[in-house]
Image (tube, rainbow, N blue to C red; front, side, top):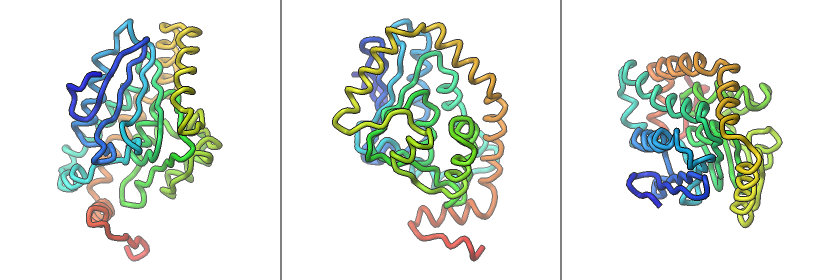
Length: 262
């Protein structure tokens, strides 16, 4: 196990790069450094012939709780240019995952919320335990789910995507499976074996070069490059308005937000 990173652990075994989110005290909340580390791991092994699958999981009982509070406190004072650069960092991670030449599997146990749900959604295949929960609650705190919307809308029906993105509701694993947000619903006791069996079969039955080319076709045909670039701009713009400041200040203070009084 490679522990040279602060917030992730890595291991390569049997053609699988295991990338474990490892910030348990913060429930794997994302900050700039953690985003950079995940992308760095992926970039480092992008051309490796010893890897055919990337498996993303968590070292604790939360997959990823979204953005880090200290990070949110920092960005509330950003200029537009700083917000654009920050949005482009997360955009670059999503681009890397969506275009990655190897299959990316997320193994979700516990909550995957906001940016954490986005990280999961950018994966190719998703296994989840039956006690997991999912949601994109950005609109409830004055944010917009700009980046994830570009590929979520292409992954599930427009009706379900609108419901999730516009209400900010959270859903359980059974509903997520029904929506098509996740691929496989597992018990906590069996998820490891289920993922292992799937990977073994996948490695045996698929061409690595064909996987690379097919992912490229999917990315290109959905026009995700231009959509993600535009989403990053919209995300930065939205951070400059009053609702963002009201929402982030209330969220940091853990105060309820009454939007009907705005």
